[in-house]
Image (cartoon, rainbow, N blue to C red):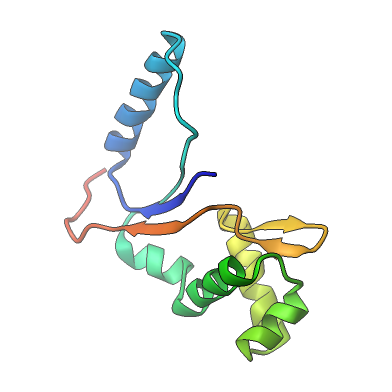
Length: 121
């Protein structure tokens, strides 16, 4: 399984990388399983989207496996409505997925690769 990588790369760098991968695929090169890259304009936006509470939620699900939102709220000792909102946000970001058993992290790991260097568009 692949990783989710939270980054703040410049758009031009991402476009160059995507074109390189497309050229390699067109040439028939066998490509490894792709990682999921969640890119933000800057680190501040990344930390707003994946708050410390949401990060703890991801960790809890990686340790426990799929859980219902209710069970997750109990495990985290948090109010159901707050956990429900965080789960919805993480689903929208692609960091969680729904299963018949609840929600789960579909990645082997969630990595942060953020730079403090200002990114120009």
